[in-house]
Image: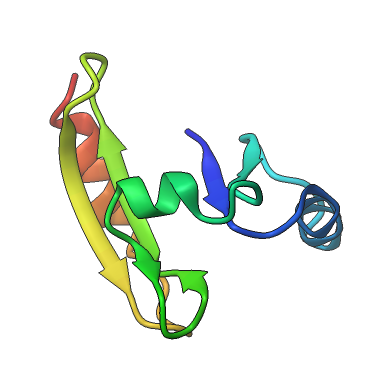
Length: 88
């Protein structure tokens, strides 16, 4: 599992520290700004930021699950886990 955000590495560090740490790496899509986010079709040009999403990619690199979320909306962990278990 990886987290990816268009924020700078220092912002990631501050955010993860404020949460008491995360059990997975948080990657920065800072420069070139939003390059990875754009490649997944999640860059919002109007906001100049990425759209919040959960994407599950299998070992072969195929996207098996994709769900976007409005600001303030959180993913359902049970739903995500069920999707991950389908890959086993």
